[in-house]
Length: 248
Length: 249
Image: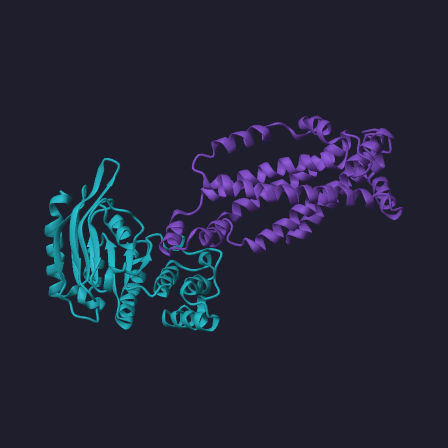
């Protein structure tokens, strides 16, 4: 379990995150839902160790002597995060090479990821030669290559069309299930929150505070039809009710 | 129509116009010689082995100046690019760069004397500045997302430089080198023309000019043009192959 205790973050005099306490249970996908600029991406970067914070603590109860958690970050601008001078395959292979020096083992790991994600036909293409969906899968493969405890996704599907993003979301859930990992997903999409989460954390802006934490009881494996179910409808209504005051 | 054949048609058209102009004697042959005469001079320059040494001399000056200049430029650029406040570098480079190269040549002659060293040193100065500016720009304009990615991998300084910053700034560096190549040829030829060099394409242009061997003068000018054009084309081919992602992301 990841335990965020009393996290504070300011940029200059502007308070972004105010005394945030949050528990992220094991094997559960948690969605951070909130308006743009509320600080949810900043919080994600704090968890990834890419941002500092003023006081507070992040405890990782899963590992002994609270070793920092291993995260695999998928960026909002996922295409720009890929290295354009490397092919799809080499983008993944490069990251694997950080942990595995043996060439044979390294290539086997790369091969496994590429096969699993269906990237085989695109493996020798460069990032500027592939579609948004394939670029997203490459970014996912690269994050997976780090063998993270938790995937961190920053509005990962917002640049894709509905069909592509839904397909990738389901593929991503399947992958999480297969490798027995969890994810924290930042989004401002209600549908994405419902489809991907086990738990939805609704945030308010300036400074960021938790409005509500909602459990998502939809059973796994998730399917697109579940978005039409009674449970999904109830979740939708709850999310809308909790954000209404910020809309009007 | 292919690019190559289009260019061939343009060259042939210009040659024909040139031929008609000179045949009509609109300008006296001393100003505009007939193209067949220039072609003859061209042939003599090569067949009598007059020009090969000059081509080699000019190319060696260009190449050695470029080699040293690019090395310095990269070093200065990468070091300066790492500083947040590098105005002190960019100001001086911008200022020096604004002085046309021939204007500085007398100073170089005072320090290094007439000849190869002054000539190459001037190329070194200018190409260093061009490459350094472009390198600084390249390092400064690294994709924020990819730098964050490097940070998330905890790559460390050396690996971040070699695996991310260096390839990331290559497109900018490369366009600096491309400019430096054209500059280097200009500087070498101009210096050879006006500052008493015994050999080199520039010295041949001014020699034939002074001797009123206008056919040969034109021929050498065209040879210089062909060399400049080919250097640039060769570099672009290399660039497209090695820095294929340039301008594509």
